[in-house]
Image (cartoon, rainbow, N blue to C red; front, side, top):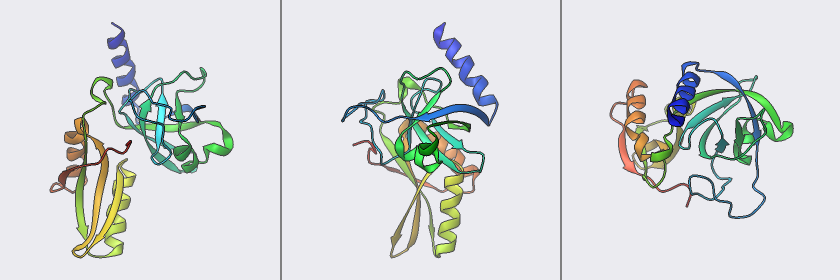
Length: 197
């Protein structure tokens, strides 16, 4: 019954693509703090804690000026009643939240996580394109970022490789569909390092 109520809540949230949610940031009070997902708190990626979204969810958070950050929900913590999302320092700094401490932000769900599947499933990345010019590479990179994917680029002798990275294994099929819809049906799936080790 509890799970059904959670699913109804989550689906009603997804049905509206953008809405305002009380958002703050958190810094654990001890070193080697372990998140609900089983990973150690890190500043190298944009992560978040939430008591509304399940672990494994990817969200796009936007301020009123249009600045945005993509975050991966890897923790659930107790928080004040007016807040539903707490960002780590990296994500909070991307949207100017460190100076404010708290504000309402527009939130959209990029990929909805599943608590039961989010741990120990492995990670993948996709080689999306090999571009010849910096301009083409930037356009592809920007397109991925704007669609909530963690893009990266690598210069090789064959051109500029553009990747969509840090995708939990259980979300790979959904990401592959998204890449096809964006015009990259031939993206190649590869194994990815665990970003939390």
